[in-house]
Image (cartoon, rainbow, N blue to C red; front, side, top):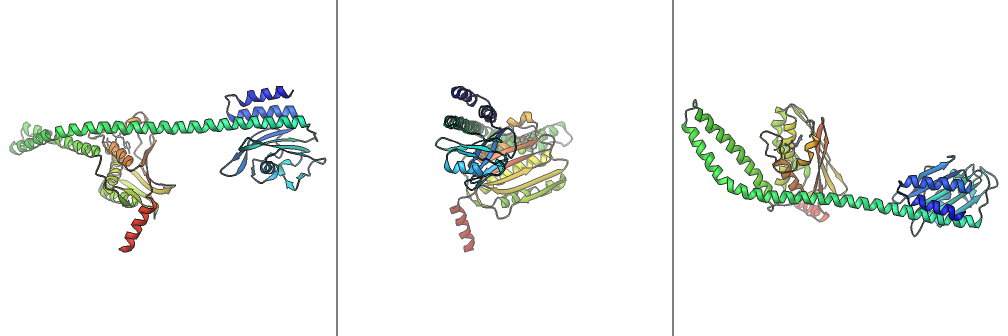
Length: 412
Ligand SMILES: Nc1ncnc2c1ncn2[C@@H]1O[C@H](COP(=O)(O)OP(=O)(O)O)[C@@H](O)[C@H]1O
Ligand SMILES: [Mg+2]
């Protein structure tokens, strides 16, 4: 009989089903086998140091959602690392070695069995309204079952951890590939720019000379004008490429993010008014400093604000939020410009990708490169039809760097 239940339990615990389902199957089997009324499995939350109810089968009377680590019979079983068999001749009077357990009220016999190997995972809690005697053989069997459960939980935790690590690795790999792609494109673009710039300057210069000499009513005047405008646009593109491919030359200093953002916002003040854009500032005061190249970070916020203004040409709200979370300074730039079509989301950080007639497609590529150079992270929360939020996380400057600034400020 013992062998039968064990092989069934191994089959349940080794299945591919979610952990809860496996525990449920085991619980139902135990309930039947021991002829008890309630079987519950509590799992240990190591951070909170609490036992949380994972599954409960049978009569749910008095089944608590959680136990603190010192509470009731589960707490006692956890403390001693041994099963507790509590039998009472009088139901409703649950006192066991001075331990009161609300969850055992109304039951005559309870078993609280730790689920553990070298570490503790949880508690298997069986309750019966009738008084039951449990043979030494059954006690032994329960020990083996609890050990089998601990193996199943351990394997499950391992798989969860592995999946988590795997996802993180894949994410990092994708970021690396993206960064390499940007680098290769940047190098190629820099070479091309170098070759294009000089002849472009000549074209522009000569077109301007023609423009001055031609009769404004002539069609040639209009053609020269078109050449000038085209050249200006190409020059803007070349400037962007040069900036994008500039690898070194970062000048890091200890900076206050709110101050940099305010500088960038000031630059666009007229544009905000012209396009009827309300700017909401939700910035945290006294934020820790960051190590940053001030000019480059300004360019990041210029790019994001320029995109937001272009998306809200007919008005809207730009919300800028800053906060301190863990070791990051988090900045959110949120607009109400209708968001980005999910189909193009994968392209927006690629250099030269633009959906605008006169766009260069370099703003977000440059932004991405700068944030990566600052050991930061940029994320996009897109709500199609509503707007888009760019989230930038930059590492807080180390304590040494912060102290250096404070002592500089004291000297002044
Ligand atoms: N705030 C925004 N709202 C909607 N679309 C955006 C926003 N920011 C960026 N985009 C999309 O991403 C593309 C790339 O942006 P960017 O690299 O700055 O280049 P550009 O602004 O020159 O087009 C834009 O053409 C646009 O389609
Ligand atoms: Mg742009």
